[in-house]
Image (cartoon, rainbow, N blue to C red):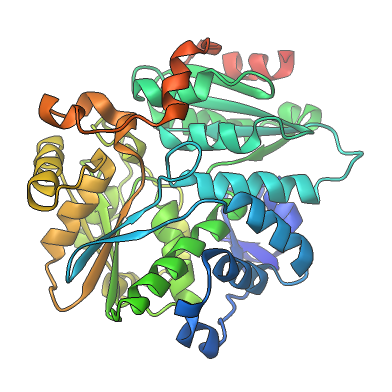
Length: 431
């Protein structure tokens, strides 16, 4: 698998280089030189394949000889050891549950695959791999559990003070071992900016072996394609063929993975991008002007992103042609009040309890309103991670998984810093 930078299509790097040096020097993002087309007979018969079999076919198609099939199969069998079921709500609406992994969020798929791919590709003589992660909520927990105890790695997670839920913070800060958490007095955008500045700092790059586990890393994007194919297989098994995916979107990595799957031959009729009031992309698709802005804190905090990093990948997939993007993606944004109303409506109409991000996706699916299609909206996190959001009558209906209950007995190891790069740099160099 060869990759180029979105800022330089003449650049060529290997998959290994893109994984370990997640940012090109020109500050673009890596994209595959060629997007392979999956065999038509695989798509035709996809309902007969298991989730792991689908994942192996997709991954091997993308990676080619970078990881031999036998080894890739072992990585996938270890990483994808939980399901992503499509739960029908009625004849034309369903929810894809992506929260059945260890951190109870969809990012488990990317983090677990990435950690195992990095461990496989890393040479024994290489110095410790320092993985920097900015999180608005769920990425950090998934990466922490995905890399916990993985030899040769050290993970530093930056999260915005007071802007993640209690359970999310516990998942970030109570691991110890090779996982470190930094509480930044700022927003997610500030955390992301600190990480990007670290990658551009000559002294840090000379001293440390840096890479990222955010969705900017191509090895996060690849495994997220798996569940789109798996969801399609489940829909086809239920005789549904006109498929629309509705994706709650913050940094736009999740929908970016779906669009990569689409470009590989997955028969998707349309995509819906659902955002909260951090509506940079919906406004861009409406008026043609891309204007990043400071992020605003909302109930759906994992989507609080004012300048989505992965949007450049999506534009690249469509050769920077906004009209082609508009043909494939419709975008909507919703307020916190809308989000709460969506949560209540889902429970009232379908007896289904959704997290705030899932509620935003449900609202967008309802707004799109094409009953002739089978719309699958993505549920990205377990509702227990946002327990304080719900009215009392719903709180009592939410089952708290055992791994969450155990968090209360663990000690937090967060390291607070100001929104200051020199302070962050000193932490990295002093560790």
